[in-house]
Length: 293
Image 1 (cartoon, rainbow, N blue to C red):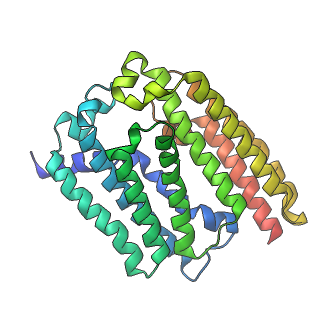
Image 2: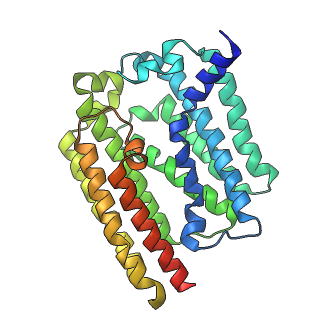
């Protein structure tokens, strides 16, 4: 195999389509309307790189562990390790290198909390791949924790202290995505669902759907409680921003109802109406920050 083809296989395994998830490190600086420290934007970028390396390590190990199961999936069977384009030994070696880089970034810039977040992400993700992905409900929580640790990593790198409301909203959003992932797998793969992901035998579509709706409603209520407690200058803008957030949640619910093998993250980042709602929410949210400043 040529070097170019090998590199292409490595890049594909690290899931470039998933890299936007690492932009969650900017959530705390955005919510706080501050980069938190001199050159805070640069530190946030370093946190994004750290979690990019950490997630790459996890994807490499996960694909080695799941190679046989992926070969039975209509889309995942084309992944480099499952298809034989990248050897398992090479993937493990690269995973060790990527994990080391993820931890080293926090150590080099002297941010122990970023190191802790990166290590927590790696440990929880590797435990998930090794065993906990077969434990119902716990595995969904671990998927949500992966999103939340990115947020907390960005906050630690930029010295922005997140509020309790902020952590609650982010946690509920992450849990909603995790539940939606399992719901779409269970409803879209049919009889192959359990063979692809054995833990799905413990779930029922109606229960997952009800959970997704309940978590979404709780997220919206939590967001509104936070917005209503803001100062007079920002309150109206942030309460108004709940409308496009509600529309985004409704759109997300409609998209996950469809039978599709698309990744849930693609529904969030590549659907036109969803993007329109997200832009509208972000515009009103930032307008509130500007009005309050």
